[in-house]
Image (cartoon, rainbow, N blue to C red; front, side, top):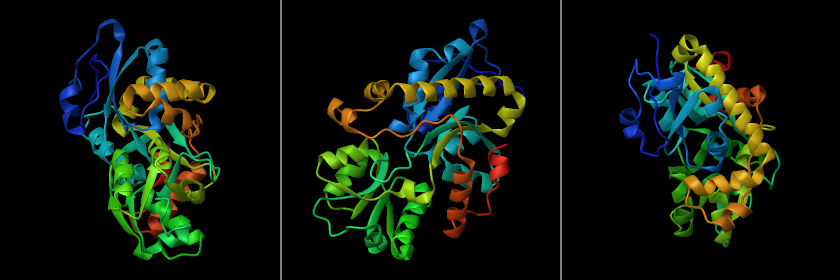
Length: 318
């Protein structure tokens, strides 16, 4: 079934409203422009796509983008599968989970990667200044907030604990949205919080400190997240998928070359202050997915028993 894409503006709405925001099948837009809906997360990771829209990288490829914000990649995956979104941004573990469950999805463009440097990454497990937790092994009996249970957060945190000689079996993971991490940690409702930027810097500004660099521990230069689509879209409209991927690649390169622009664009889709934006650690924005790191996340997920079936990396990365 051939799909067409309706012309639409950039909006921000809950995932539940995505279907209403997106154009229906067989809609066409004037002048041959394909308008696509993309599910994203309001964190620093997706700054390149906002920059790409601003810089006209999609427009010059006859694509108009509608962005819809969600809590996490695990919420975006079913939206793409149900054709509420044409493309989605999600962490790799969410995509491996979906693929292992039989959802026909494929990665079409890279999204974001760890810097690979301990002490200088954009995500970490944070604790309050006066916390007795000092090392990753100390997290073994802690209550740790992650944005989505049984996903990339708890899987990589378990690896940090294991590498430090601890047993992660009894970690008490609890689900908290990224924007709520600072408040939950400050209130003492959790012992530790896994936070990515800009929320990591907010916690640091309130006196918090990192105790584990879980992305760095999981794999060298870990690919954290990527843009994806259904296999149906990839097969039926390869030209659109190729143009979208090219626009994302140009956006990633622009973000790499213009870190100040990344910090500035954050102010358009988050409420983060200029002071925090100036202080935060930016992730890496490579154009290519690190396949070895995807395979490592698959191995970690299998070890933790989060997959229904072993994921097929080859199917996810055709």
